[in-house]
Length: 100
Ligand SMILES: [Cu+2]
Image (tube, protein in one colour):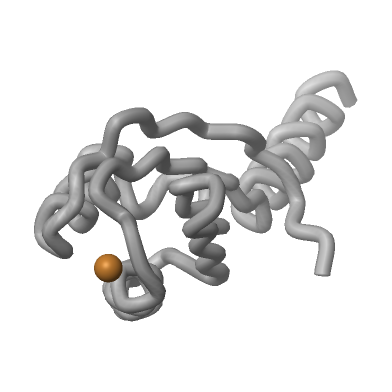
């Protein structure tokens, strides 16, 4: 009985994890105009595991909603570099269910 309960807990927990989304904020250096915003938008919209992209020129930030594990922080940083910008800070702001 105890084992069953434990198993059930694990199943419930893993289900929760699989639907979990992560919000990542990237501070960007070198973003100056609408074209930069567009470039970053297109770059991240092409990446697997990203469900939402918000680029703020005013805040010089990109906010991404991703799956809990992919893409990795390193991949996100590399994507920013590939787009021609410098990621000054990458932070995971939340790791919870997406409210849509
Ligand atoms: Cu620009």
